Length: 324
Image 1 (cartoon, one colour):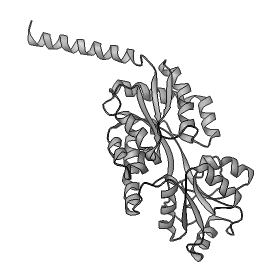
Image 2 (image 1 turned 60 degrees about the horizontal axis):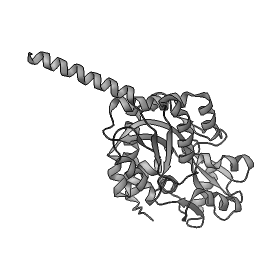
Image 3 (image 1 turned 45 degrees about the vertical axis):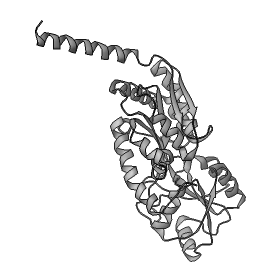
Image 4 (image 1 turned 90 degrees about the horizontal axis):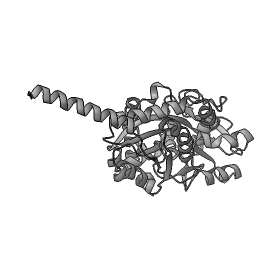
């Protein structure tokens, strides 16, 4: 048999194997690792996605929460899994941007992840207790400058989006205030309602019920456009601090080396899920802004993730933020 004939036979065989592989995947349940405790916004989002993704994939999608060490344990475990499409990593700004600037394990793990799809985002929002003298964002900035170091602002975890938002706010406005660390967003909101803390840079979706009841005062959102869930709240651009954007976004990744056809199938399942009217309604009710179809491609997530790291890591490192 001539070499060209042998080569052609091998090519056909390889093509047949690839086709069989594409048809075979997935052959058993898929696990999505959430690097945060159960019940939080990322866990909730993952469970909504998993319910609908199983329809497209034909297999159960299991959620496993692996929290601890600033999300580094969960992110590292997902990155080190076999690149076969059966272990995925869902995460957000805190786990896949902020943590990487402080934890070597996350820094290395981010290099070993393969993008699948960007999912959704909510802006961060500055909210305060109702007893604060300022009535709007312009007044808040002026009041903080007139009273340096007197106001208290809550942070949730070193290097978290809430923490970096406040550092960014100081940098962009020249305001100075005390940073008070908390273990989670829930106790912050409780203290904010009770008037025990002055203000907070919150992931906007967690403020919805409090805003609707009038329990706290909204000042501004950190996005280019107003947040659809609270359209009366101005952007920082509108209150005279241009370019102050920080988004609490979510994405889905697999381990580096996951076959292209598997990534394509996973991406298709996410695209189908995010196009489902029932899913869209649930996410919208939670205050999530669903990524556009163009933003949902693996390539778009890769470019966006890279840009976020390049923007925020220097700020985190310049502020000398260390793990708590």
